[in-house]
Each structure stands twice: as structure tokens, then as C-alpha cells.
Length: 110
Length: 113
Image 1 (cartoon, helix red, strand yellow):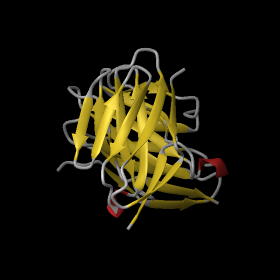
Image 2: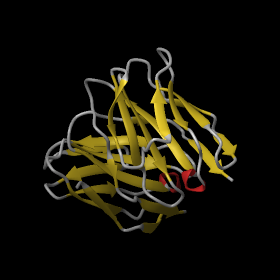
Image 3: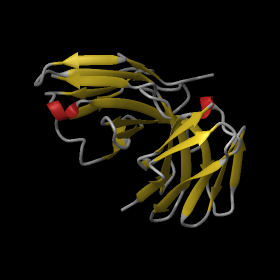
Image 4: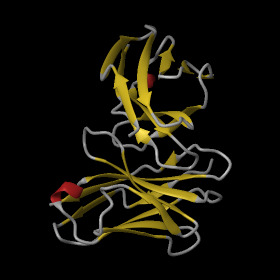
């Protein structure tokens, strides 16, 4: 059974204080690992897809990396508007259901 | 930019009543999904739909649930007889045939009293 574990559950940063969020996964043949951002009461907003170990993707202050067992979402010099819950999900075959982790709730304080 | 839309944004119903949640997926997408998220918990898969039939469903998607694509644009989730434990955010998502990314709608908050 596919499983996704995210840590920490919550993270509080000062503005400009860089950090990383972790996503550990077990899946029977990874097709893709996805990162989403979710604001309170909203739907998940797509950020990145990673397909193979060693792959990296960047978007503004966010960089996602992938190994055979985990993925990291690095946040460089975060701003208060980066405050959200970040969700990790895995997929074992194309266009099949995503299995989500519980997310990391990030708060960035000015 | 194309996006998934959902209506209503909030639905309040009495236990035992039927509800229909509506979604308009992104227009050139062919794979459709319903997920739910109980308050404070993870996003959980309910059902996927492709080529006018269910392609996969979870244990949550029992006989009380059904999905339909009544026309070329809408995708609906029906709960026949709602229970208190059906209270959750329900998200519709869609994806295309050439990428795996699933794009989510804003959700419908279902409250069962």
C-alpha cells in the first residue's frame, strides 16, 4: 500500500529564514511525486511534479528535490505570503489516484 | 488560465437527504476525480472517471455514492442518503492525457446536520 509521511507537521519561520520540508514515501513503482500548496478552505494548488531520483524543480522561492525514498521542498528566504499547508502526493501509474500525506503547515512571521 | 470550478461552495443538508455536488473540469481534460478532506485530515481519494465510466474507486465510495458526466462539461458526485460522517470538503480534479498533473477545484464544503 502506498504511503506518504510528511514532517514536520507544523513549522514556524521568521521572514527570510530558509528551511526544508520533508516527504517520505513508499510506493510500488513511483510514476510521479507531486507538491501542492493549500490555503485554508481552498483546494490544493499544483506546484511541482518530480519523476525520477535526482530531479529538481524550482519556482520562485521554492525548490523541490527527489531521492528514491523522499522528497524535500526547500524554501529560501520565505515571505509571509508563503504561509500555507504544503502537501506531498505520490502516484504509481499515470492518471491514477494520488495518495496524499497529511501536509506541513508553514507559518512565516514578518 | 483554465481552471476547475465547483458548485456550490457550501452545502448544508439534513442527515438522510440526497446531495449533488457539481464540477466543471478543465475543458480539454479527459480524466476526472473526486477527493474529500475531513477537517484536519489528509486529502482522500474517492473515485476516478475516464471515458464515461468509473476507472477506480476507494473503499469510501460505497453504494451511497455515484458519479455522472451528464453532458460534455459537467461532472457530478451524488450522495444518496447523507450521514454525519460525510461532512467534509469535496474536491474535484482533472488531468489531461499527456501530463499527470491533477488540477483541483476550490471545493464544496458539505455540512450534514
